[in-house]
Length: 291
Image 1 (cartoon, helix red, strand yellow):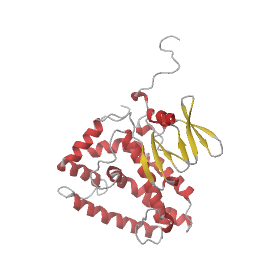
Image 2 (cartoon, helix red, strand yellow):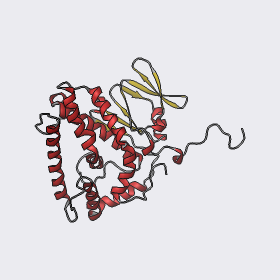
Image 3 (spheres, helix red, strand yellow):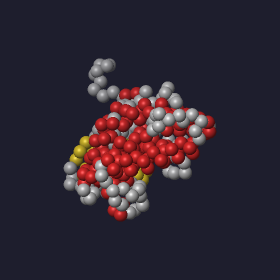
Image 4 (cartoon, helix red, strand yellow):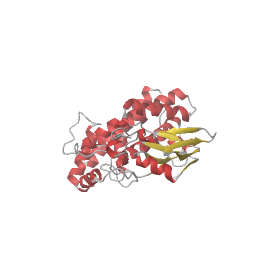
C-alpha cells in the first residue's frame, strides 16, 4: 500500500481524544472484560458480548462481580481510559488505576503550588470564589473560608429540603450501613461516590494527583474532595431532594444512577474540568493530556 494510504495509523498521545471530548463513564457489573482482536469487549452474566470503545470513554467503573484480564487493562490505559473499582452502582469508590499516558508536568506544578503556603491558599481562594462570587475573600484565611462554606452547605440542605418539601435531619453517612440512612442521604451517598470516581479518573487523565489538595487534608483523596464541592450542589444535593420527593419513600438505585448520569452529561462535566482545573490552579498554560 502506498505511503499516505494506510488503513491504520499509529496511535499517539496527540491522536487520542482529550478528557473534555470523552463520554464521562461507563458502569459495569457482573461480567468480564477481555480482549478480542485488540479491542476491549464486555461479556455480561448472560453471555452477551458488547464491544467497548475505550478510546472515547473517560473511565470504566467496575462494580461487583467483574473480572478483567491483564490485556484489557493494558488496552484501556493505552487509550487513556481510566479504570476504577467501585461498589454496586458506584455507592462506594474503592480505587483507581494510574494512567501511564500522562506526563508529570501538571503534577509538578500541582506539587509546587501545594508546597507553597501562600500559593496554596490562593488556589483555595479561587475555589471558594466560585461559591461566593459576591463576597470579598481577599485576606481571608483558609479556616475562615471553610467556615463560610460549612454554613453555606448547611443552609443549602435546608433550603432544598423546604423547596422539595422533604424532611431533613442533617447529613448522615455510616460506612457499611447504607440502608439505615433516609432516602435523601442514600441518594447523596450514591451520587457523591459516583462523582468521586469520575473526578478521580479525569484528574489522573490530565496528569494531576488526587492526593494533593488545597482545602481538604488528611483524607485519601483531598484534591477530589476539593473539586467535588464545586459541582455537588447541582449533581448531588439538588438531585437528592428532587428524587426523594419523586421516589416517595422507596429507594430506586436504577433511577438514581440514570438521573445522576443525565446531569453529568447535561453539565458537560468533563469539558468543564478541562477548563476549571488549570484555571483554579492558575496554570492556564499547563500541558493538558492530548495536547
